[in-house]
Length: 314
Image (cartoon, rainbow, N blue to C red):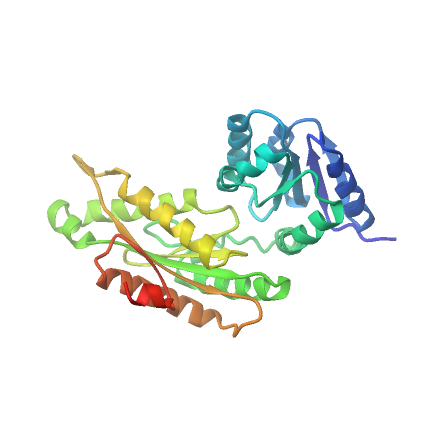
């Protein structure tokens, strides 16, 4: 008997290709369930431990769909790949859907074999995550939580780095690391006291958690420094994520003791690509080098290491 790898939920299968992709997945050993609306992914949170992936048919209110995706991710949908299939309007909104929580967006006129081939690396990751959850190896290890922020600490980050690097290597996907810290936090401490400075660190960490994808890893490395691992993400997408976060930090207001506080942050980015030398520790070291380069260049910016010629000349 073919082993069952987990459940694939197909929601709103208005495009015929969703049914054909579901048939292929069923023949590969997955249990496939269908639902008439996207809201099905929000029901029965306990079922999520058995979900291997979600396939969504896009043909409706974009704002409503984005809201459902965000609620799914915020409500505990980590490690579950979400694939969206739609028409040209969906493709034009790929970035919005990705930011809301979808992992990949496909055109409905693609052959089902091509869709599944392109989705397979994330399906493999989702399967490994599901097995880890079912085996009781939840990623949120309370013994490795930072007391100030409640986020994973440096020890947890080291374990997540090892796990993510091995997963990326096995499924042939890139891995990126972002290291960031708050610019001139010392001035906040001197003006308002270390209690307010600690509050800003906590709020900054909270922002990173809200902005990351559900199965990215964010940890507090100490002081006002944070690490962010992005599985399946190469240089360009990692830079976009860091640039978006950098802009959001500079545009945000942090709550102080008696008045709002504004700060900026610098972000260092590095990536590993399949087929090249694979050293996870060098990945973090390069992200650290990029961070220090950004600090030396004036702060409140994003840098990638190793730099290209155009970056080095900047």
